[in-house]
Length: 155
Image 1: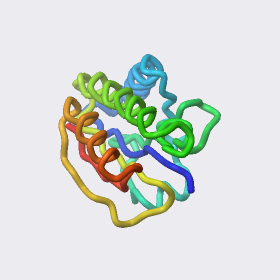
Image 2: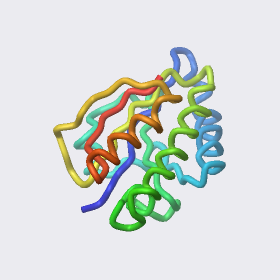
Image 3: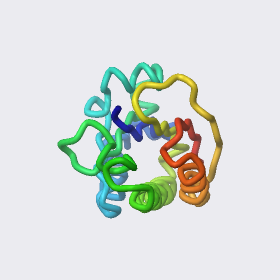
Image 4: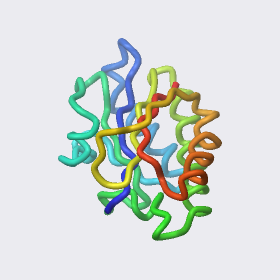
């Protein structure tokens, strides 16, 4: 099975005209953390659409986080079978720092994120701050010995 970290970046009302500029900002924040961020149509894989559902273009930007732009899964980032749990925890820290910097933008209202191994439709839902993301998700990964299926709202 493949691992995925994906979701939506919800833009603040009235920022539609800034969506392209915001995309550049969140991508540069991801690059600074050693992450690759696929946005918009590049993140619209059928399996992800089935899990996350529809969205409103212009108000919401779909994303997929990978280690490299050429990848279409998050295996190289969060698969414990590829790197082990401690490397997954380090990647979660990088994702957490990306969330903190992304949510500093006044144009971003929140980030809705799913983390899963393969297809799932029974996600544990949690609301977190960006600052609490890494510690909370790392705790859940250590507890499960794997990446549990999570649906997170981060604001």
